[in-house]
Length: 169
Image (tube, rainbow, N blue to C red; front, side):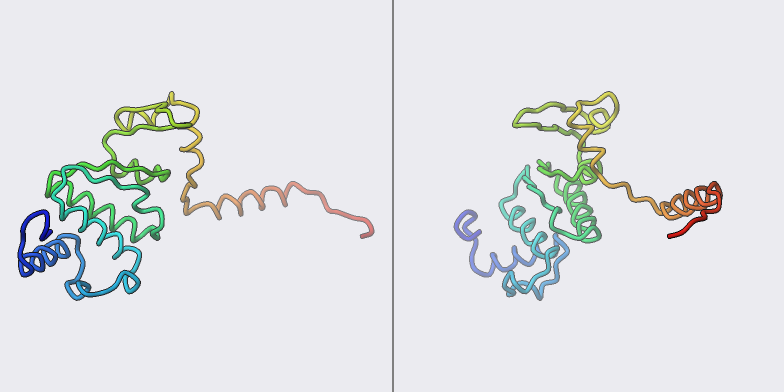
């Protein structure tokens, strides 16, 4: 920041503190080494570093893929807030279609280096869709809380249908 914006050492420190606050990081982290930070904190530092350049566009390449789901959701919420607050645009590169659905307004699906579908997120992810897009969507595990009820019901119905087994083992 000193080189690009001609800031003094004191001004750089103030700008870094501002960026930490903006990315919801405590100021006590300012002198820590990367190894002392959690994955979510490291990702926020990356966002702060990107913001230091005052960009209009930030490229996020698998920005949440290494984070646990709760931390990933916090980072996505931060990115949404920063987008509204600063008027930012993002280019997300990800295989996580859940992330795409939550944050993207427009989407392009690439297969073997070619864009096979593009447009409004809701349109691209609605039938009919390109076979690769469909394959990506069906590969996402479905989080259902009632799965055990279905398994127990299936076991119950199959055990009541069986006749008594007899014979030697």
